[in-house]
Image (cartoon, rainbow, N blue to C red; front, side, top):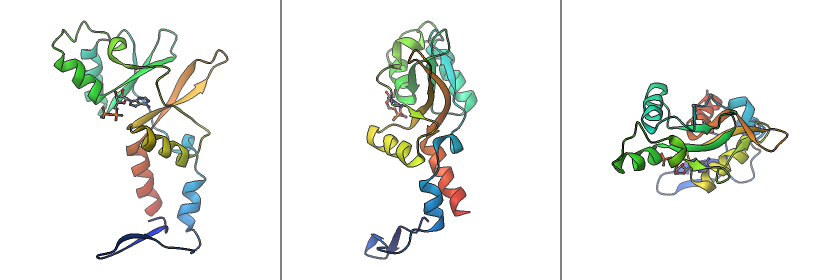
Length: 162
Ligand code: ADP
């Protein structure tokens, strides 16, 4: 699609070699996260696990970013975190999402001005499905301004093709 690889029966994929990068590839490699980021689902750290599961279903998304009372990023939850909490057997309407989330600073984030290629590399090396797009405040705390995910980058590939 990007003119970098080709495929042959019984050979598989191979690097095209010294051909000039395609126009599509040049477009792709200069794109910034802000150009394709999506709208994130954000929840409050005191929301119950039950309420977050309901919101994830309603928004048809794979997880949510967790904010503190001032609206700064403190954690995130994915499907697996919610499944783990669900098989724990407790009352999910009483369990705050802040207790089970993956918490800051163990969170991989991306800035709006970073390249899409750099963000994609983070997704792959950290083996996660999404990254919060953040804007640092003066005190180093992070505001969430978007979401970068495997779905978003897959959609971009299709748009470039079209
Ligand atoms: P799934 O739960 O569907 O496998 P992920 O692969 O994104 O989704 O998440 C796996 C684990 O990694 C979860 O515990 C989740 O909280 C954590 N995680 C997801 N995204 C990030 C991220 N950007 N930074 C740090 N940890 C993350």
